[in-house]
Image (cartoon, rainbow, N blue to C red; front, side, top):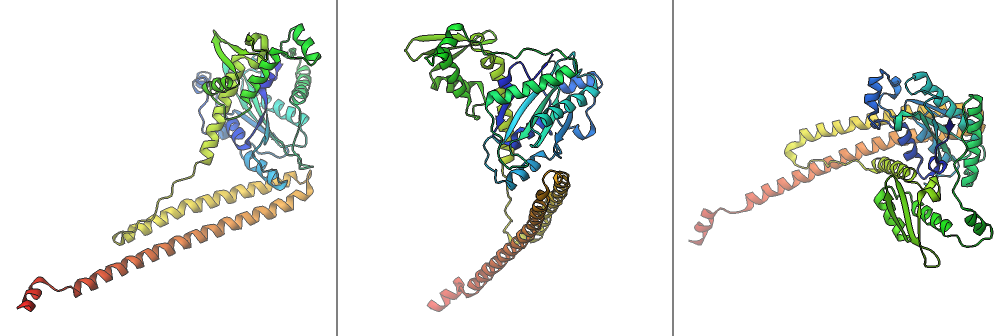
Length: 415
């Protein structure tokens, strides 16, 4: 079988921050889950050299995307089209493969999984940038893709707007076509469970307590800051729902609109509201929030020593502080050059994009060098001013000391 997931809601969702979604998908310098490192060693499997320190075991992209700098490439397109607000910047799709379809113990299947993810992204969103990252560190080490789609259209500059059901249906249909081509079995999509009575109530636009409960649960999950089981449970309580666990399933209780006590287990609500689906989503949010926190953390700045006796050591410290800035400037320059190469690849689709981006990147490059020179000059000027003030204070103390009469001299005058 090959399906987007056992729960479509869990696997197709909006991402507020492109950087967070891409960082999680690449997983650079992040440990794998489920003891996967040991599993790889046990089966004598090695990741590609360029992915040695990443969770992803294969990467790819569409429309000229380099998966290693996709964050910056997405950002360039958003800025060019004035779509810089951090609100649903990307669409996240997870595409999974059964063990009897693609074998995680066969390295060529890693790349095949990634190629199929790239093909799915190209077919679904041909005018959008997409980055595809293949993982195998989940349950049973099943191969699965994290497909991150930039919502800004390369041609129109407009943001992708789809109804939840529409994107799910399109993705499933395209996914099934690829599965059929590979002669893989196609599963029926999971359906939200509704009784005949509930269907009739909804058809008549009348109140359904089950539909009411689903809406309360969805409302509790709308805020992406809800990223832990405890927070989710508190948010449910705020919406009048009490959550309890029975074995490996969730059970919900609440007072309906008629003030009648109601209780429903997850199996009655549908797989979207199951324990496994919700805990997986909360875990994913927690990792993305962690990435965002690291990105937003500002480096500490060590102030210059002001003691005149340590002048020599201060100069050495300044020189040492300058070296990382030079290195950072060189790294940025290298990244900018890679941007320019990427934009050239996009030129065939968006001819006017190349000149605008190249000009902007050159300005950025000049600004970085100017900022570096200005900061260095300012640091040296501040240092010289502090030295001057220190010398003046010492000179004043020496003058005051010379003017002050001694005790013996005071006694002589009194006689």
